[in-house]
Length: 359
Image 1 (cartoon, rainbow, N blue to C red):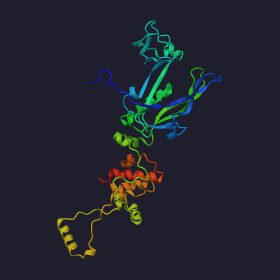
Image 2: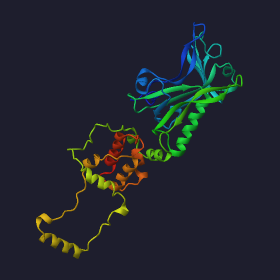
Image 3: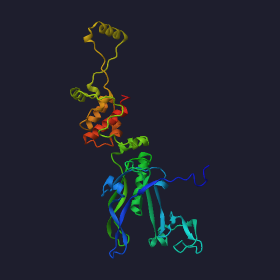
Image 4: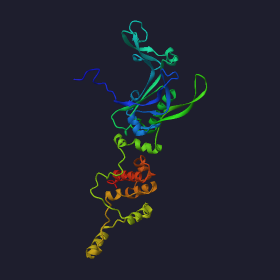
């Protein structure tokens, strides 16, 4: 039987944390201080994938629950006890010294958590002495990184928190959901005014960005989650349903390329029953060597070997063989770099795999 109050609790596995700065020695050399970085400070397994100076990560948000992926509160931490107060600007949950009634500290012998206490936000005395601050715990998945779970970035930057919340709202407005939309998490420089001295300074903040056009992303958003997570096919990996290699005739392929649009093709004629019988009669009396047959549709392996020379030719192939307009194939090719031959070939093979049976 499940344990009430425990078995129903779920926690997303966390694979690791990515930082926005490093600890560097102070001038005296007897301690350290935090220093912001121009790039994400990542563990070795991520540096191996993305490099040392990475300020752009391909991510997906794993859930629509903002409390899970974008947990954000005013928080006060203690060196000895960790989180001792969490508030939303109206009420807070605080760790209290049962004897003194104050916030628990290193000398506290017995603690009690109290709910519903007033939270003054930026007007709180703890906030004014920087013992309390805004904290966003941003959690996301990276489909191209090994492991099952989320990565986390913590930030107390008001500008980063605003950017992430605004970016999420924009994604939901355009794509009708946030979870499993391919996004880029970026660390970008902006100029702000320091509230302490009124001087301008440059800081780096988090943002949500996207690759490709909004139209392409809308088409991607309509796909099931599993299709969005599928990796691109390997360049040297043959299609799984190929049984033998079929070599395409280059001359015939060149002729096909120049004859792709419907207005350039003869209209297919439908014969009446009498005309069909007459044609069948002529066919039966003709010599065997003169007998004509209906053209056989090219097998899938033949189509797989086509190598479009550019995006336009790829779209023409899609129209010729599958009657697809450019907007219809945009979701299939948006993840590929069509300036590269191998990527164009992979994009074309993706279209063949998706539409051949329907063509």
